[in-house]
View 1: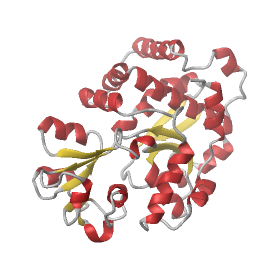
View 2: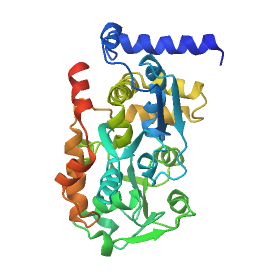
View 3: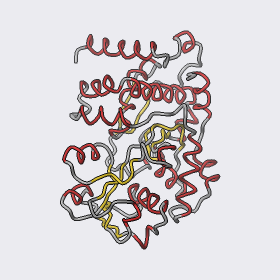
Length: 332
């Protein structure tokens, strides 16, 4: 892409954000304290939180000149933030709770989106309660899908440890086992739900974007490195502002956001990206991030996945100061 094309795309995004009222007036931004650093490293997001890619141009408008997207060889590894290999990243709420319970150093800063995972099953399973005695595919015990399915099962009175037959294999994706008819159910993450619907394989037991109580809480959180947040508070606020503004753009202009990602070569799956951005909620203004962490911590403790109380998880691993400021600044 030429410099002219890049600049045109950048200005178009800023114009759209400004017209929608998502970006503070430049005078107000200029009055803020200067950035302590112009570098930010973001863990590469999954398809459902691709707003973090959309945020790149807004980060440049905030004054960042060195913006890097860091590879994530293992999406279960949250230690990249704690080890200083990245500064910010989108993480599942349940992941964050488990990590903080285990002593990992991460700081949750805001809710990112609502409802991206769906529980798929074959025709022998019509409800979540029907999973009793059935096979559920995951890649590892203790993984994010394992924790989330355990919560879904416990919600309807099942004992996840005794009532479900967990099928684990780190080398085979559960979606492959499911489409081959070797398991009865598994938890699908974008673009897997879109692929299964296109192939007309299985049916949805729980869609967390629509079904209560899951649809009332964030599934993904924006987390940061405690060292970066502490050393660079001005930069942290601007990073959060750019990302939240990008989620607003994805919510109001999903086709434009999906096309931008496709044009930049970040995804070959325009239709799946568009469907994901259109169906999943970006409700950082409406929903309470702390309520989400309290909800997950309480339920995960009840099923034995963590030992800490919700109060301790919130005290040890959250910092909502920036979010509270931005809610006042970027009024709905």
